[in-house]
Length: 191
Image (cartoon, rainbow, N blue to C red; front, top):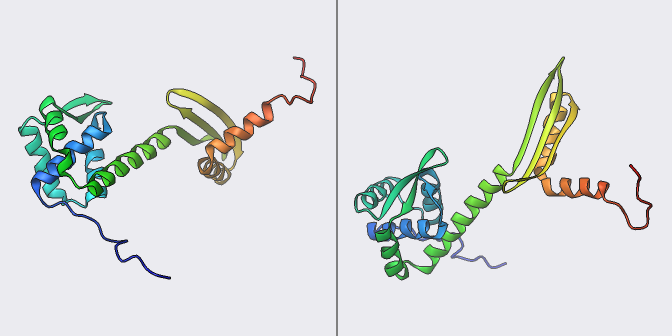
């Protein structure tokens, strides 16, 4: 089997101008306010940029009024200013396509993980006398698809139930819906 010698090669941003453009591109692509942690995570994952250099560039971009902070979700987040939008629209073509692709993938993956983490809740709640319930919740955006409380017995069994729910929450949801659907060949149940 032939090994791809380029498999572990990545492009590291070293030039401060390229780093600035990458930050502006990331904010432009995300198209929503992005927290400091989120932005640094996406930048470092996609470009392997030096952390201290990235911090310096963020301060420069704030000072040059290409980005600003806004208060969203109880924290400061970065957004592009009109001059930042102009800058990235004029110079986005100066970034390598592989850098842009990596940034897009990093932003997409980060928000996909965040969305799935926020759309799912599973808690083990004590009832007393070493007995526990499991509370399961599955959301799609702001809509609650499933909210269920089940008796688990022991804490270990509750933790196992949570792990199984987290492995395939939509499969669990479909199974519950399948149990409750009326089949065409059956007589409807009168209530």
